[in-house]
Length: 549
Ligand code: C2E
Ligand code: CA
Ligand code: CA
Image (cartoon, rainbow, N blue to C red; front, side, top):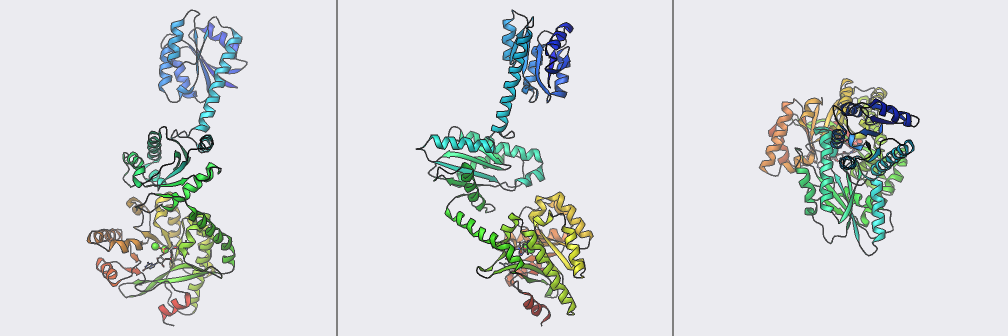
């Protein structure tokens, strides 16, 4: 049964209304305006309508309407005002204050009932339509509605060419994480508002994912990175101290018969291709994206059999201890040698496996292989060196992670401190709470944790203090770019100093030249992994390299 609120200071009037309505509604009663507001504040989600007398002590009906109008929740409840029979002015005033309808005393039961039904019905339908049509947070069209609306616009304007433009806020989750959900919401609202203002009559916009926007606009002859500066401006207004990049993808509609959802997919594909590239913020969809998709499909079709057929090999790249200039560890890196496709570097398939989840299977295979090789070396009488394996972001979410790793070291009879786990820096910032928890568990079990790719993304200093890691691995891009001029050397100096202050040993990755090595030595960096000393190599070669067999 729907609930309504009857507000009248006259007990008899209230009683009459209750008699008329109690077979259809559950009724709350209030004898003055203040009491009515108190009930509404507690029950606003449950109340379908209010029947409001205008003349009352303590707080009259007009005041109640004013309060309701100013309140985001209460203004959604429809109000029917009860007036005397010759009260035209009063009715007018109540209607301007937001009342939806009025009934005249003395009450006519059938009319009251029908007016109440109509009002409630109208309000509920409108709320329903609104809810699916508009995204509540931003006021932009919701995904489904955007698709429908865009479809009808394209259909109705056969002679007009259109573009679909999609925008994706990079590292949006990080904003929520570091600055709170409220700030994240504000960011989305600012972007939405900027889009609405800019678009005006020229197109329509929708929010088609948590941080994804789509627009249908009349074909533009030109785009440049400045085309989207109005969005950057709207973000810069917020007190967010990290740089927020938005990437854009444009599909210039050449096939009007495609569903708009597919058009958006195409724009998003283009959008993804510029993610993380700092000087380009937009791209057009073209046929090469389809070819990439097909190439990916070939990989997907082959991946499972590749694992069972043992086409994946584990290579090892030594990490050198600079104080003795000898290998003190190694990183296990996967390679795929396909009978027809040939040798494939991990960057061709790892990002895809991270997206489709296959990485968890492959990683377990790599960990197992690394542990087996380590146990072979120990059996052969070598002084073992620790092997670092890569732990993907997806692995962190695997509830069996600790069990899998424990089973492995048991199976091969290894000490956990010989298995180092490299977790990439972005994982730390994207899923901090869960990660801290898992890392602490793994550490307690005796595994050594290395933060991989440090310096490649946004490193929260807070995070470094909060999470217990054992080793920092400086990102190779970082070393290679930072060494090119004096200012950059200063940054490198700072990061190494920071690690020392945190008492964390550093592995510098991607060291290729004597000059880079010298700089790192001067700074007091302990370990180096890079082509300067050795490239990743197959097991047998690695054994020769380290133990001279
Ligand atoms: P990563 O974890 O940062 O691994 C280091 C990468 O730097 C390796 O690339 C290595 O070959 C390369 N490298 C090392 N020294 C130098 C150097 O002096 N110069 C240059 N230019 N490069 C150097 P690789 O083997 O191609 O692997 C690329 C990425 O693929 C890895 O980056 C890692 O993120 C991922 N990956 C590789 N194997 C695995 C794996 O088994 N599991 C997972 N989850 N990811 C893996
Ligand atoms: Ca690594
Ligand atoms: Ca790395």
